[in-house]
Image (cartoon, rainbow, N blue to C red; front, side, top):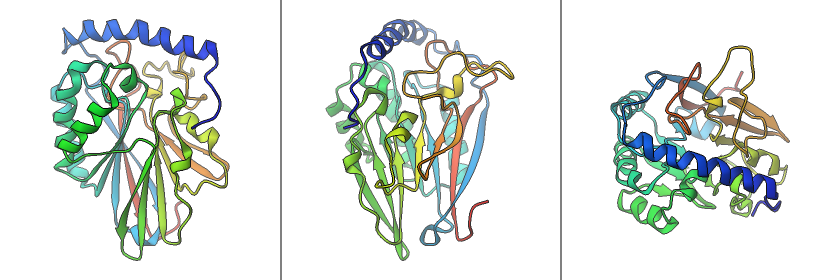
Length: 281
């Protein structure tokens, strides 16, 4: 596990945010169309050099917070279908309350008709009241791969894609011992909900790309001003690319909302990862 215990004030901060946010989610779920600033989705793109995967594509989404199925979820499915991914990665905060479970898996099963889906859990998933075994049962039923401190491998030409999914780093549930050793021809993606996982990776961890969410990109952005609040576990990382100790991280702004059903100057995001033969620019 990530070996630093949660400090008492960080634990209080997390519990306070959850204690305030959960009743709000229950209230807004009674008014599911009361959402603002979630009508647009931005497509972001990155390229990774790895010849055995050249021509292959993955899509990364995160922070669904999907307690009620909305027309925007159908639009997201259509957008992702048009991107023609080979794999789809979802990095946690799937829902907030147990009533969201059928709505969540309606969306995830829609993704599964497009490509294999790999999912990890976030802090809201643990706070939701849904036990982990229930997530696992539903994932198995819908042929979705739920990774909780686990790794899987996909063969590709002369190499392979390694997909590692760790439990939520912001709750110190991530066990980095599940990261496999480096193997020639393997490209390894680490799926983790919170960006602070990057602070625990060193040169012994054979990871080529880390994909996270958790920040919502700040959710409410005032031009030229940094977000006034980020959840614990972001370590100041808001959105986009970050590098540390030779590891490359991308923080996705996500598709949902938390606290208030509002995004301002911070559109939802879908990330496209393309593998190429040529070195990235």
